[in-house]
Length: 523
Image 1 (cartoon, helix red, strand yellow):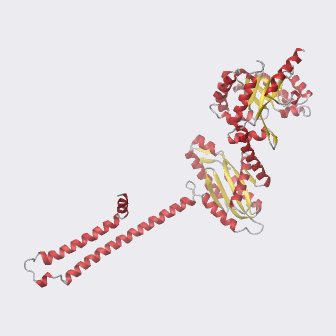
Image 2 (spheres, one colour):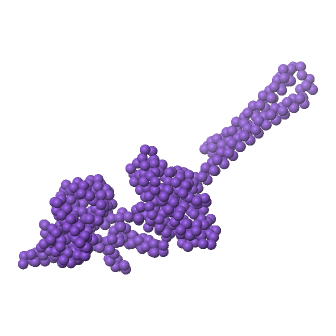
Image 3 (spheres, one colour):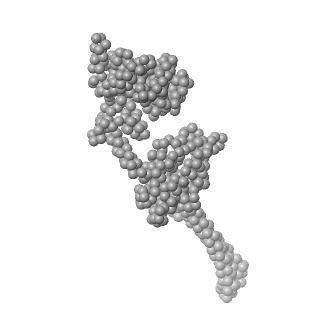
C-alpha cells in the first residue's frame, strides 16, 4: 500500500496530464458522433453510418493537439525538475566543501587542496606552508555573550583572514574557532612568517559585534612541506604540535614545528596515559613538607603534596605532571586524593599542627569544591581550623569573584586561606584588603637572593611588614641556609619551609618529627 502511494505521489503530474489528454479525446469523439451520428440516427444510410475522412482528421487533429500540449507540459516540468536537481546538487556540493557559517572552505575541501599541493612539489627553494590557527579568548565570548555573538565574531574573523591573504592562498574553517591556511610556493620560513604576522595584525584590532567590541588573539602553528613531511596527515599533525606550543604563550604567537617539539608532545602523551594509570592503581603517593616556627624550629604543620615515582623515568617533579593533570581534568581526582590522605595523617598529629594543601585554578571554578572539602574533613575527623588551603596570587586575581564564592563557605567553616608565592603575582593592596587571608607565603625566589641582592632583602622586609600590617601570619619558602633563617627571623617572619628543616617525608614519619621537636624544646 505504501509503495502504491509513493508511486502515485511521484507520478501525480503524469497522471494529471494523461487525464487532460483523455478528456480532450472524449470531447472530440462526442462532438464527432453528436454531429454526424446521434443527431441523424434514424435517417442515416449505410454509407453515412461509416466513419468519414473528415471525422478521422478531426479526431487525429484533436489527438495531436492533446499530445502536443502534453509534450510541452512534460518538457517544461522536466526542465524545472532538472534545474531543481542541479540546484540541490550544487547545494549539497557547497555543504560538503563549504563552511555554512563563514562561507570559507571546510576541512574536507582543505584536505583535498593540501593533497593536491603535496602531489606537486614546490619549486626550488620554496615550500608549501600549512598554518593552523586557534583563537584566544573565544570561549569567553561564547560564555559571556552567547553563541550568536560568537558566530558574528567568527564571520568577522573569516573576512579579516581573507583580507590578509595573498592571491591563491586557501583559508578554511575546521570548526569552532579553528582555522587553517594553505599557502603554496612560499619562499621558505620567512615568507610563512610574513603570512602569520599579517594574520596576527589583522586580528589585533578590536572586533565589533552589535554594541560590544572584543579583543582576541590567535595562536598559529606552522609546518612546511616537504621539510616537515610529504603526507597530508604528517604535515597537519606537525602543524598541530606547533600550534600547541603557540597556545601555551596565552597571547598572539606563532611557532614553527621543530623536532624537539614532537618529542616533547609524545612524552607528554605518554605521561598523560601513565598518569591516569598511576591514579587508578594508587602509584601516586603523598609526601609532607614540614613547616616550622622560625624561632623555636618546632614543627607546626606539614604541607601535603603528590609524589610520582615512575618505574622507568624515576621521580617526576610536580611541576611536570601537575599541568598535565590540570589540562586533562585529572587535577580534581589528584587533589582529592592528596587532601584525603593528608587529612587522614593530620588527624593523628598534635592539636596545634596544621595541614596545608594546594588549590589549583581549575578547582576554583568547581561549585561543589567547598562541600567536597568539608566532606573529607568530616570523614577524617580533622577539625576545619587545622586545614590551610593555599592558592597563588595569579589564580586569586584571575577570578576574584569565583575565589570568593568558592572559598567563602570554607572560611566560614573555619578553614584557613593562604596566599602562596606571594610577591610574584599580580595582587594589589585592594585585593589583599578585601579578600580575607590568614597567611601569606613569600616566594622562594626572593629568599634565594636575599644574601646576594640588597633589593631582594628589602623586598622581603617590605612583604613581611605588609603581612604584619594586615594581621596575617607570614611564612617563607625555600629556606636552605642558617643565614636565611636568621635574616627572616630578624625581619619578623614567623614560619618557614625548606631543606634547612628537612625534606618531604611520607605520612608514617610525620608523627616522629613532632616527637623529636617536643623532646628538643623540652630540653
